Amino acid sequence: MGGRTIAFEEKFAELVGCRHAIAVSNGTAALHLALLALGIGSEAGDEVIQPSINFVAGANMTIAVGAKPVFADIVSLVEPAIDPAQVEALIGPQTKAVMVMHYGGYPARMREIMRICRQNNVPVIEDACHATGFRATELDGAGLGTIGDIGCFSFFANKNMTTGEGGMVTTNSDELAARIRNLRSHGMTTLTWERHKGRASTYDVMANGYNYRIDDLRAALGLAQLEKLPKANERRQQLAAAYARAVEHIGRGELEYVYGSNPTAGSAHLAAVVVDPDQRDRIRKSLAERGIQTSMHYPPVHEFSAFKRVAGPQLPHTRAFANAMITLPLFPDLGEEAVNDIVSAVADLCQSRAA
Ligand SMILES: Cc1ncc(COP(=O)(O)O)c(C=O)c1O
Image 1 (cartoon, rainbow, N blue to C red):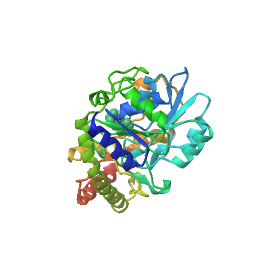
Image 2 (cartoon, rainbow, N blue to C red; image 1 turned 180 degrees about the vertical axis):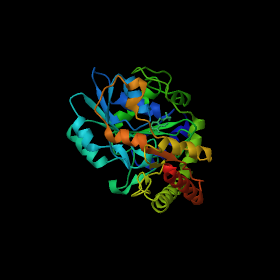
Image 3 (cartoon, rainbow, N blue to C red; image 1 turned 90 degrees about the vertical axis):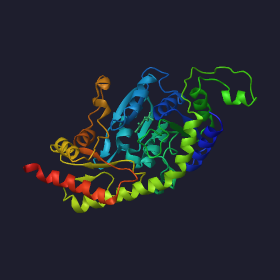
Image 4 (tube, rainbow, N blue to C red; image 1 turned 60 degrees about the vertical axis):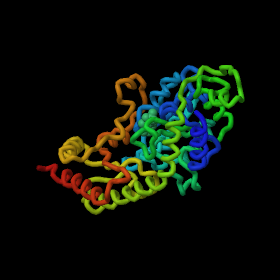
């Protein structure tokens, strides 16, 4: 963690608009450090409210710190982000944090969530792994990942910007930043770089930390990627708009585009549609046969074997979304013609359901 890492952190903080950016080895490490820095799991029975429609990392890290994930439902099938009303209903004395995930890079309902959490004195962690570099006009231009107490980013290979593996933690709190920096490198008071520079010759260990460091090679990749990110995000947004248009014109009402009412109001990390749940698996299989790769973001976390013991409330929208959703190809080099072809293929397969 030398000069490149410091420069990467500074440039990233500038891009998203926050006081501190701390580069780490991956997004999961970022989530782990966020929970640890807030002291979550230090008391028996600590709970973290979070969506079940999420990559499993947030829930796994909640368990790792000794807390319990409490899963909340999503707003709707076309807005699969945590529902503030659910958060409000689930907050109780054991709630130690709310973890929000900006699905596909589209802002979760942060105004309501922040109001509820501030009223209840509960910190907010933003999983902004899909949302790097997006600033929300409706949130006065705030960068996603800078609105709550701590933001977490991933630079895994499939993200809007990548360092192969890599991540970032953001915060406006000097105290949280100091804790995160300390825990990132074994809880040590000084780092190799400082000792190399002759600023320190020894160190103490203040906390039982980890090795969640990034290295200068990845930071150099990150610096180069940051230059490309605005254009890449803009191109993704154009493609998301093309998807939404195609779904409206070619879709014949058989499918809906997730966040289709405003497809450019996010970093457009994912292109997701919802279809008839009875047809979903057949459609995915037929698309694969036509050479169109699809995925599912995400199978609900609370239904995984490792989470079955975490009993929770019924999540009807989560269940319906999980049954109906398909993620379609989306990357900056995808052409608009390809978008139309993909949507035509999905629409044809929806139509052929009676056959
Ligand atoms: C929403 C979300 N959270 C967390 C992660 C974990 O990030 P990483 O793979 O860098 O550990 C990812 C990506 O993989 C993600 O998509």
